Length: 83
Image (cartoon, rainbow, N blue to C red; front, top):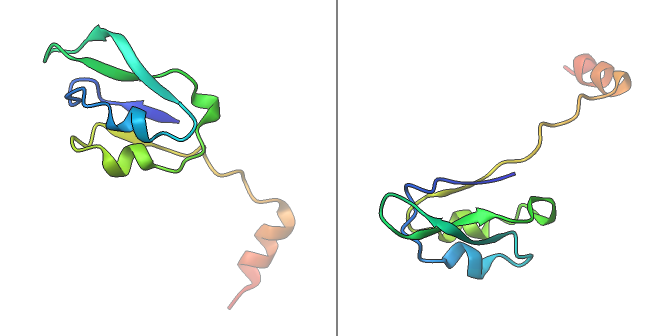
């Protein structure tokens, strides 16, 4: 999942330009600074590369993964038997 803190964003567009799969695009709305901020337009295409996070000068973009699936019973037994 990709999240944008629209109030922290200054609208530079770096995150949009560096997204290899076009997950972000400029919003038609303006934030309190009066600039268009990026919005998520295709979350399902996000690969989790985090280019948007790394290069955002305002730390306004966050990428989080889905919760890890629960290990099956066999994996749980193996983990608990160790050491």
